[in-house]
Image (tube, rainbow, N blue to C red; front, side, top):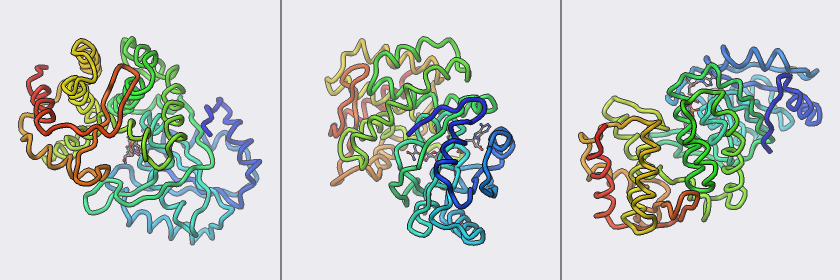
Length: 347
Ligand SMILES: NC(=O)c1ccc[n+]([C@@H]2O[C@H](COP(=O)([O-])OP(=O)(O)OC[C@H]3O[C@@H](n4cnc5c(N)ncnc54)[C@H](O)[C@@H]3O)[C@@H](O)[C@H]2O)c1
């Protein structure tokens, strides 16, 4: 399913040659058009005709309006079930492109070529596509699997540092929930550069893929991928509402710190282990003050998370480094303590 591309993109060319699509549509945003498309086009060897579709960059474009715009373009280019869409971009492009492709004519093929770290080790894998609606993230979407995922790690060279670090939070999460060695390898990094991260990309991608293969529709083990996200999403929304957006990775790092402490409060891990985890996350993700948010407003947002069932807040918590338990129902008191723990950490 996932293939790491060589410098000539030969795996992609071979795959397209086997697929024999009627046409190739390539979806990019303004940044991936500038930084990634030239390399792709310079190596694309095919007789099949192709068209470039460019949209503006950013989460604000992950809407039904943009999806409609894409459906109109597909119709203009007379896309049929033999057409293939190449999603060349970060999570916004793979989510949006996957959504538009999987709904157009009840589904045309698509291939993901993620260009951000978050896209490579998380968003492009797992078959979730989606758009945001009525201020709710990913509230409309499909489960749809790309034909293939092609990863070219050199694309990370032009990625801004904040975006690189954002994806690194998901890699740390993969280590914490499923693979202690991966966690140890990552925390041993002196600094975050594409060169330092690249050797560990494949492990992260495989951890996500393995979990998803066991539980595509998120009935059980896939929920472990939500570690750090229950509190992380709530905090991400609050920063956004206050007009001070933070990256997804910063929110997840903060969420992982709180949920690690929560794992300790729930007697799932030892305090010493929790402190080691927290200190290592703080090495890569500086402390973010959240004292302006009340515990009540954070818990209210957690209760609204679409992953909850029957009004309960469902946490995935650590039972060790590399082991995670899902469907943990915790007391409101312990959630409050975990948030206070973070609020009282000093920079
Ligand atoms: N489907 C899933 O399972 C899943 C999982 C996690 C996140 N997501 C979604 O992913 C999205 C976030 O993805 P993201 O963090 O990749 O954001 P993004 O797609 O907005 O990309 C971040 C920024 O980096 C730019 N960029 C992309 N590649 C670049 C490159 N190689 N060089 C320079 N600039 C580049 C983009 O233009 C954009 O400005 C969110 O919408 C989130 O909901 C989906």
